[in-house]
Amino acid sequence: MAKKLKTKTEEVRKLSDADLAKELEEARRRLFSVRLQVETRQLTNHRELPRLRHHVARLLTIQRARETAKAAAAQEAS
Image (cartoon, rainbow, N blue to C red; front, side):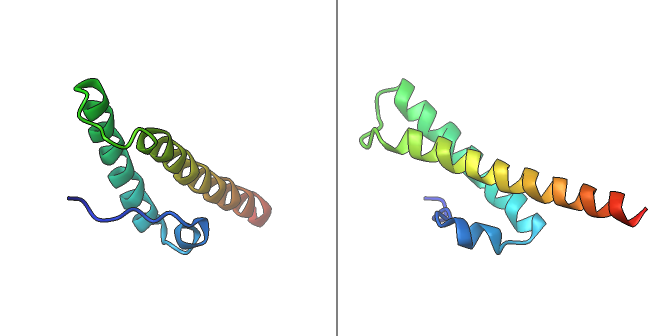
């Protein structure tokens, strides 16, 4: 099975940009796997799908916040 995803927001915020992208990719792969299990009726924990969707949204939000902070810093510098 894949490695455990980081669930705490504080843990995710401590990651570097590359690690955040890797975590997002892993979460999306896991989400795909869970969606496949839902469609084939193999999923035993029905709360896993919304939890993973929320996790992907959290990762995307943190990633976007970093991008806007970098853009704002670059705009202030010039």
